[in-house]
Length: 340
Image 1 (cartoon, rainbow, N blue to C red):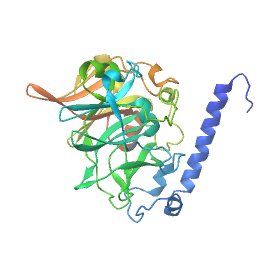
Image 2: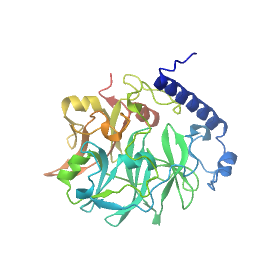
Image 3: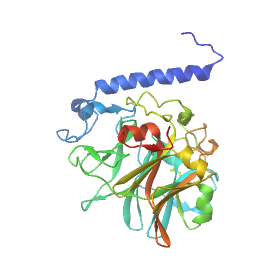
Image 4: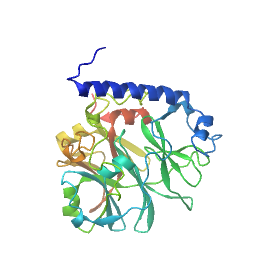
């Protein structure tokens, strides 16, 4: 195949895809405990809940994507470096609110923090667009998390620094190591536009840009990712039927129930009731962090709110806005409302 010099973007896309294929092949070949031990893991590989061949190298080594372990915050009124349309993860505990900008999480993926006296880990996997907050306390023990540099179903595999157990970010389940079979508690959080945070939570604290800056914060390292016809070749699973693989899907986790709704379906209606108690709503004004070259320049994908109505009051539900291929990979039996 010949490449023209006046088409550098197409050349880079093909080159990037080629490199990913090589990484996938290398990841499959090295999916064994001996290679992982050489990479610095002391994980108990005699315990595993998934096949090792499901776990692939994402490229970076252990902690090559550095978690933020000593986060610094500033008042929302001082965070004038954020665009009004930019996406932030909003977490509220005991009336206290913190926000974690995706322009930072897209480069670090994990923030080990505490809020309202509760130790938390706020996580974001760009390849799945999954923003999930967890309690860091498990069976009375405090954990903190780092990145393994590995993926399963294109999703971040975390590890805890206390036992080096590996954890699936999308489900919160321990998949390899001493704590295999355990599950972290998910906490209700929302991805909102910064302008919404400014108006609704003027007392909120916002995660500050790490100093010195270790990454080009504000830039999207995955330009046009959510406009692709399929995920990167790092995903080796089956693609869903009746819906585009990269279509955004809201996954609502309510008690032992799961509900999946296509974002386009909700956007058309603005409000949907999944039951007498559970309601989803959509409003515009939030930019996709995975679209344009800049995090703030992406197209408007809007903001979702998932609540449970209890009498005259409402409570936020644990939910996530991910891609259809991710929902199908982890929950193949789950139908997606709005799919054909």
